[in-house]
Image 1 (cartoon, rainbow over the protein chains, first blue to last red):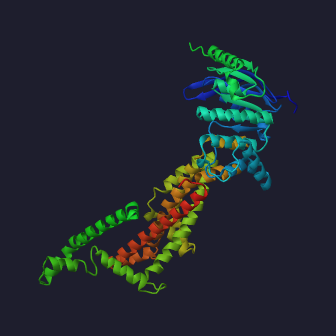
Image 2 (cartoon, helix red, strand yellow):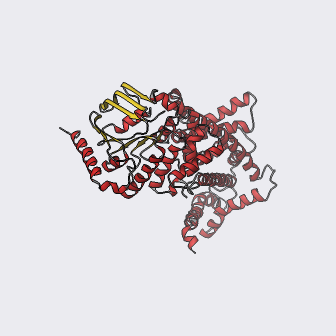
Image 3 (cartoon, rainbow over the protein chains, first blue to last red):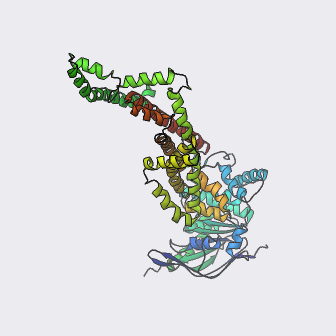
Length: 261
Length: 292
């Protein structure tokens, strides 16, 4: 697929959850196009459906209406082809497997041969700067390291699309900054398409090429902001005029959607 | 001396000492009626100290004194050939072998039922109530029926006893494993889904390892229960061997000392089996990276 090809095309996506308290309109009339190589952040207050939208792309939820294509296929077909790597809010590592064992998990399931499994898990571990931690069990690692392992796990099978659901949400500010910088570098090198759910404005502004601002009840897209920042970014950049303006724009968008009446 | 403070050794021996003291007292109290009756009938001079001595040395006491049981155990464990019909080692072995076979059958049955219940929703609705109902039937009522029915079709010996043992012990395993196999949280299951894993892969790579703590908790309960099942299975059969048979002949002939030593041996075996299971559990958990 060439740069600029559409990885995700969503058209008028509608999704209603039937809960005990009655129906909840999680997504309404979502239109979104994601190009190959894009780094898209979905930002919005809780309950705005950003995670749900991510789960729809991943075929973990089925929309009630509208059309969605992933790599030109239905999300289900794309999932069967293992088109994406998914990173959850929590590391979701299996406690009975070592770091290496956890990295091998998707490879074992996909039937990749043993020596290749070892090579790829080493390679992925290098990408997240955790070489040497192969034999450690998850509980021996800090929260930030565990989340890096979970990112590495999503990289082992070379998906072109990464779906990330607030992967750094549970981490403290300092670790979060480190991981943001690190992950930005990783994206710069690999140019994977990333869909990144967050509720942090600086995180969205720092990482993304495009920021999708959402608002709740029902969850809808209220603004799509193209980042004016250059592709190569450093953490210091967050003090520049450009960055502050971008942050302001996102904040304004969020506030506009926040009309709780 | 630190190890004494830290280990459970002191607390266990304290409790044991307390039990033994109470036991000796109870032996005097419960056996005194029979003894005093005998003294009076035979016009024997007696005082309290003679009463105490005699109540700890009766051949058929209501409750034997602890040392009588220990002496009897010593005699019937070390004092006889292992293959003698009067050796407790021989009887224990008979019971242990049906316990093990019963536990293995119950384990396999319990796990298979749990796997079915977790994966097939019709089984969940139809089988689970029957499993629970099966345990409301008193085992003492159904055990003779199983022995009789199996005996009628020519199955005798170890197997019927193992069946009774399995009947009792599959239950905690099935219930525990249903819970264990359902223990992975939705995110773990979603992760498997994103890899497009098959149900078999999800089972072996996620559900099964996630259920091991539940498996061992169930195993520890059911191995003790399966010993009880094996003993109960020996009661109605008119069995000639096994701890259950030993209890039965003891009660036929009023050999309370023999009954008690069989009981104590049975509880030592149960304790050992549970302990061995705990050792196995900690070995497995260590291999699975548990934080010990």
